[in-house]
Image (cartoon, rainbow, N blue to C red; front, top):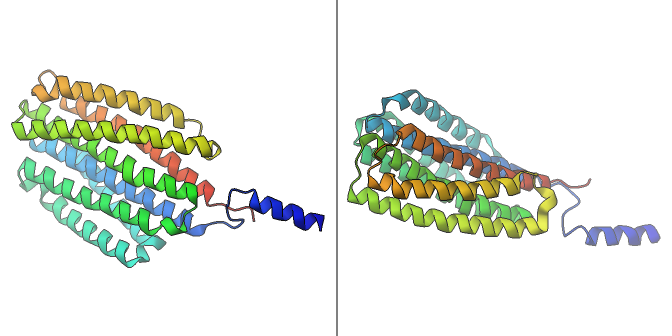
Length: 283
């Protein structure tokens, strides 16, 4: 009787977590990791192609490498269980087919057309990310649900805004001129980046206050670093790029944006690892 009572109390004290592993949650984490890789590779391809078409020919080899990364990410996504979901499968197929067509003709288009075309496909991929988040939410534990929203609806959109500013900005710097349309677009990006970063910091603080043991030791450092780096990048964009980019190196501006995205991906990966850890049971 005492053993039974002790076991009952243990079950109710485990924060409503199952004693059995949640394989669906683990599979979902693998899919969203590959989805992240697709977004990042497409963002890099867009930015580097824009810089190349504006005269920075040194980006050519990097473009081809990122196109291979796009194909690799799509292949992994197609091999995972979540790909059998008809809604996810159909949207992912449409995106992959559109990206193949775009990759084959990107160098033949005007820089602004190529940039906008890649942006459209990234937006479709971000919509797929939100679909995956919502489709899989019923299979996730509480931490999984919260972390998934942060990853799909805050971090990935934030990498996109940084990626757009990085790509458009490096093209402006390579050309040495900025037009009014680009200026207004960059100002809108700056506002969106500030909003998303504020939300990231607040939401992560809330999740960490209740799940600190699920996260790696670098999470606070990464959050602090990304906040400071975004502030510096925004200042550089406002004071230099919006004035035409005189005195800047396009590759350096691009690389600074890439460094911010890399730190954001560290935060993304910390959340994904937390989801995987939370999917494990005790039996």
